[in-house]
Image 1 (cartoon, one colour):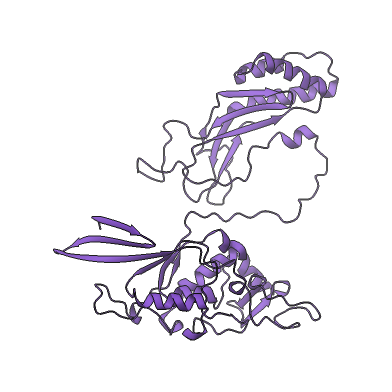
Image 2: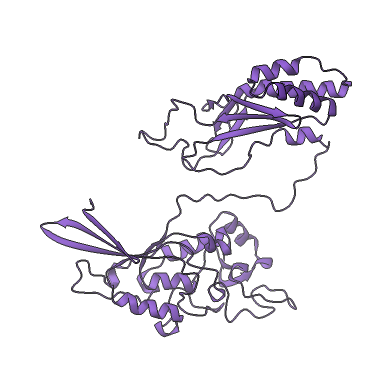
Length: 404
């Protein structure tokens, strides 16, 4: 509906909308940086019951005060704007914590209380209804977690949000204290709550409200994260190559591999080609770029094709390889991945990108490429102001010719 008037004061938003000649007001209350201080119950034990069955008097002091405030605004729409679950200690630990030798904690080993170190064991093959220590996870639970399908049965901060009928929340920086998978599990836990799971719902029905709430109208909180990207990386170093590469070969392709961008990214990509490990070649490059500070790519290729005095056979090979790489920069394309998240051979659906800025010195050559060409077609959207990159898809910055 069109908004005819919007008024901001403190942390309330009142929007008035025309409705059959009468003015109906919708109150929106947003919170920020709750930091895990708002909990129901105040302390979450490792053996807490499923759902949100804690009595109101068991809530934290901050949650109790908020519940009193909520009674004054029974029909308001509540929105949490980040930093909801952490870093407050009581919001991120079990209290009481597990005992040594329980929940898969090895006998004689210290049993930490940190929530993020335990996973809920409930899979299609097995339902233990128990937390398990991260060092003692069975195979079926490991596979479930690797698919991003982990669940949790309860959370005292999540129960505060549900009990007070928050409509939606967005995660903030501190919410990722638990790791990205636990954030997703928290979102799944809240979104799947039903009325029977939350017996102490706040915001009772108000006959004076234009939109009264009742227990039957309970809608669980939804965590919004459409702009988030989950990215994984190795925790152990990759195995060493059978043949060690030279310093130049190992650094020549550092072009921002693995960087995450938003769909509206319109900047440039800089390809940095490090010079071969040769003093003679680096001296020649430094002298030439000093005399030619803004050359074209063709001029750089022409310079590298000419003989350089004082090079031994290995240095000649390195200079030729550098020339070939510079030549092949003209074949650079932005290549969308296919449905299997691989860049298909030949980059059939990609687009060419040609840079017009080259600089360098004895250390290497910089080639600046605009990632968005003019007239780019956007098959994923017919809108004029569509994002440049299709949301949710990965792209490669690729050379489409073979390097020799």
